[in-house]
Image 1 (tube, rainbow, N blue to C red):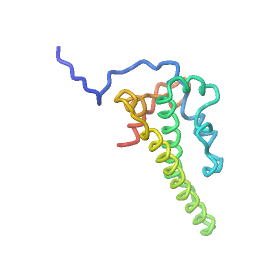
Image 2 (cartoon, rainbow, N blue to C red):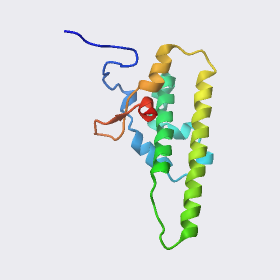
Image 3 (cartoon, rainbow, N blue to C red):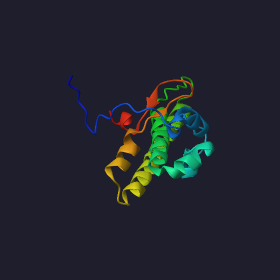
Image 4 (cartoon, one colour):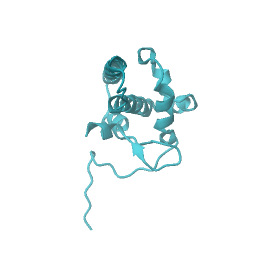
Length: 148
């Protein structure tokens, strides 16, 4: 029997304790705050901070996925104010600024990660570690899922 494996196509890994922290509750908790004030510690669930401290690459993976999911939701918003053009215009402008802020925060996290020597395993952990989207569901998100 032939099988194909590659570092770019990892064999399905079971979710470990770190990966079971769902992304969606963290995203929901952050959606209404001022993104300018968003800090690293805001991106990680308090209950997971000790675990992510032991596995910093997985912590970075979680934080980047939260930021990417927030960005996606800002872009996907299709709210409309048919009787209020000014409100529509200001909301769209605010969301565009939020996307820029989130992208800047992602860039800073990524640059900070790259300033230190990293192994291929570190890079794998950041880009390929799956996290549950919602508790009790099987759908997961990885950093690479946002690149397609």
